[in-house]
Image 1: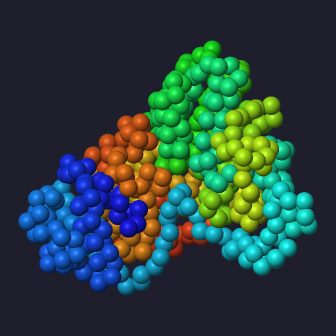
Image 2: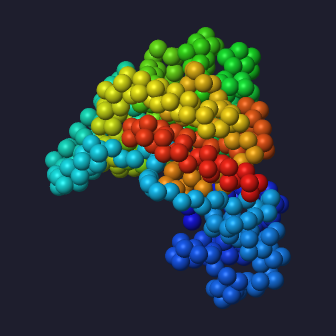
Image 3: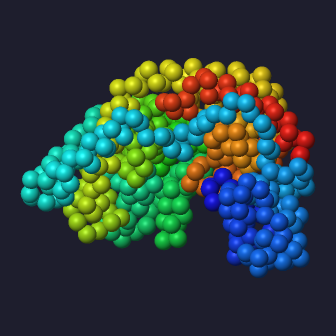
Length: 479
């Protein structure tokens, strides 16, 4: 079952106050698989035969019986109850596959796919970088070259780059590494400053530290989704050991004033950790110029494979490792390196850096084109987040009187891939913590994130806006 459907199920169960049991999931999984195979929804008899759940049980389990089962897993129906809003199905004459979810992940670049084919086709590159034999030496050189490529994009020395399995691990290493190094060194637990709009990989780290007795201050944000600099300054304490904030919000694209926050942290002698995963390759970000001590980046956001990322660690900053067992990655991440993905990440970083200025201008133009079209399609919608000081590859839109899960699945039915929020929280069925912190009325507005990438063109936007008015009109009739 895909994450879109899981998101819709979570949303429906929360709205209807239905506590999901194993029996619920059994029925929903069966209905989803049945529809995927037969292109029609299963009837009572098929459900009972395959799951043991009788029609009477089904009516008791779900608020609207079989109708709920259908709408919860995205099976089109002609009518629906108010609390079980289905997706709509419309006929399109020119079905296209339009990917507008680049903030979740980007397709592998053609150049990177070719780079990986060449790598795996060369048997001399199959060595362990820690081995002293010739294949090991060649693998070591590949990793070293990639480290130089990534560091060159950031204007830092190669020794400050630690390769990880992705952005989430990089965030974990930075935050837990600082906290537990402090604990090991001083025997005391300190204070961390962050914000209410961070990625789940950051917030979950902070909640984990709180369970150990560390104290965390979560700063409120402005209505446009940006972090107020003075709010950071006001909560700093003598025992503050880290300030952690993102450069670009993954749901709204709003940019934070990292230069000003860095200056405050520098004056206070507090390390600044920046989650730059949505910023790297989209905007210039030089750690030395911004007083950044730690910075996380990820490969799959710039056309590299999933499963590789990096953490910049400023010289002089010491961390406790998350993974013990070897001296790889300057002793901060034990385990044999993923040489192929690291190689690909280095190549993708260089390509993104070379294209940065041109791509920034193109995305800014595409962003303006999208907003102009949106204003003609639906004058009742709102755009969440700062419209000016932002990364232009992300637009978060709230549609009045629309269920976001139903809209997401309706667009998917005609080949348009979008997201209702962060991919890392998909399926939870909860309102976005980012939009909640911004004060957005998520009961009135169903929010969808549109995000663009290298392959996104105006023809993709045109296809979206050709059918979006029809989808919205039908959804509002159902609602």
